Length: 156
Image (cartoon, rainbow, N blue to C red; front, side):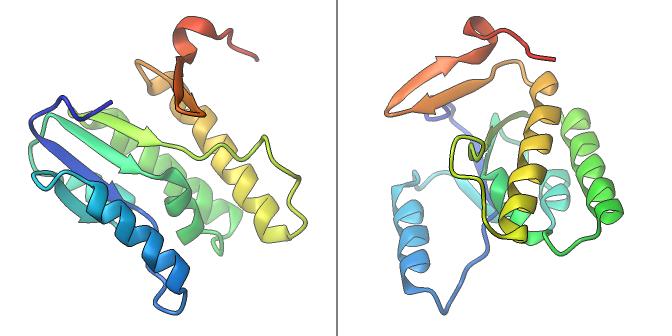
């Protein structure tokens, strides 16, 4: 979806885990797969700042929103709400085209842990709040992409 752009800034949100060899191998596969001419920012927990400090580019690819949520699972509800609203405001105000990869967590098994449930709830709500800001909304499943803005009906 972004390969046709000459200038792409890729923002990686997921934390590294030096003690988890499988996770690190997965991250390395992602790094190797990216085109060499893309600019890369590893945002850590501060996705808002990464967006604010972006170099000029045609398009920004954020992968993925779940990494941002994971960084902030320990935040209280009020702190999370402030972080989330700051991020939404930053995205609204930025003039670059922003593509955000969002994990779909609502189709799986109901999480059996409080952190799993909190992750699903926060990611789902943030995803819903981003949707009205999007010019397009795509669902990619089994190697196929569906434009939800064209094919879907909004559910209140």
